[in-house]
Image (cartoon, rainbow over all chains, first blue to last red; front, top):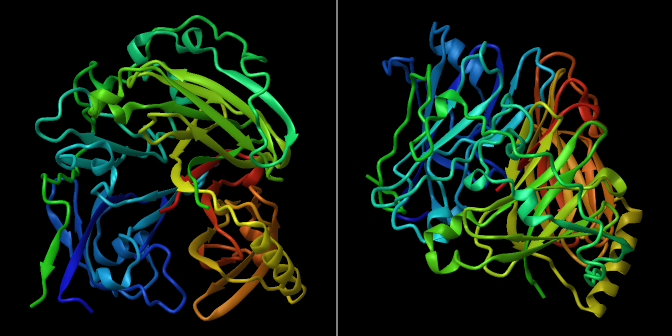
Length: 264
Length: 241
C-alpha cells in the first residue's frame, strides 16, 4: 500500500419510486482485490440540510439507495447522496468510478446505467483546457414532470470562453438530439451542407472496405429545417443552462487534477 | 499490431433507430485544429464482423455536427469505427423510439491485429478449450449486471481483434455461481448477451449479479438497458469505463 490515498468524490440523487443502485467499485474482481480504503456517505435534503451520515461498509458491492435512504431518514422528497471515497492507486489499474443503475418503478422506459462521478476524468487533458470544469451538477428532475432522466450540467472553467458543451442524457426530451433542433450548429440545415453518403459494402470481411462507390446512395434530403426548439430552462444561446425546480446542487471548484489525502 | 481506433456500438430493432452524432466540438479549444473541414469515414461492422456499410461525411468546422442514422445490418448489433484526420472529440450514439432517446459516447482504443502464426495457435487452442466449455483467459473483464421484474441490463460484447474470440461469461452472486455461457465471436464480430440466459431471473426485486468475462483476444463491452418489454422495447446504451 502506498503512503497516500486518492480521493473519489461523487454525488447523485435519490427519489422514491426509483430503483437506484450504486456500484461501490465498478468492475470489482471476484476476489475483491480492488477495494476502497474508506467510504463516507452523506445525505442532504432539498434545502441543503444534513439528513444523515449512514455507515457504509466499503467492502460491499452494491448500495441500494432506496434501502439506504429509508433506513437513515424519514425524507419523502428528493435526497442528495454524496459519496466520499478513498482508494489506494497501487491496487487500481485505472481511476475507479462509481457507476449506478436507475429505473423508475412501473415505467416501460429502459433503465439508465451511468457514471455518477462528479469530476470529469481525462477530458480536460485531451482537449487542452487549462483547468477542469468549474462545476458539474447532476440532477433528477421531478418525478411528475420528467420521469427517469439524468441531467448533466457542465460549467466552464474560469478563462474558458464560449458556450460549453452540454452532455445530456434526457429520456423525455423527444426524439434524437438533432431532430429536436436545439443543437444545430448556427441554426442551419446540416443535411443540406453535408449530404452524407453511405455505401453498402456487400459483406466484405473486416477491414475490407475500399471506399468504392463513395458518394453513392445518398440519404434522402431532410425536410426544411424547423425553428430551434429550446427548452425553457436552457436559457438563450450563450447563456449557461439553468435548471428549474432544482434545489439540491453540487458544485466543485477548480482544483489540481490529482487529489490526494495524506494518511494519518 | 494495435492501430488506434475510435469506435461506437450500434443496435437496431424494429421501431428503434440508431444514429451517430459526429462532431469535432472539443477541437474548439485548439483553434489551429478547427479551421479546416474534416472528412470523416464511418465503417459499420455487423454482428458477424463484416463491414456492412461505409459512410462518408464532412465536418465543416469545430462547431458543426452531423446526425448519421445507421442502417440495420446482420445480427442487429455491432460497432462502427470512425476515422477522421484532426478529429479530436468524443462522438455519440443515440437510440431513439421516435419519442425518447438515450445516448452514450464511443471509445478511442485499438483493434488488436494478431499475426498469422498467433492466429493459428489461438484458433487451435481455442477450439480445444471450447470442447471443455472454456476459453483461453487472456483478457478478463468484471461487470455487474441487473435483473429485475421490470428492467434489466444486457451486455453488448465486441470482438476488437482479427481472430475468433471465444468469450466465456460466468454469472455469480456472492459465492454462488448462477450460470455460464461460452460465446464464439468472429473477428470484429459482436454479440448481445441476454443476461436472462445465464440463470433464472428473480421474481420480485432487482438482483445484481457479478459477471466475469474471459476472452482469448481483446474485447470490450457496452451495457444495454432494457425495460419491461425487454429487447423488444426501447433500449439504452451505456459506455463502461
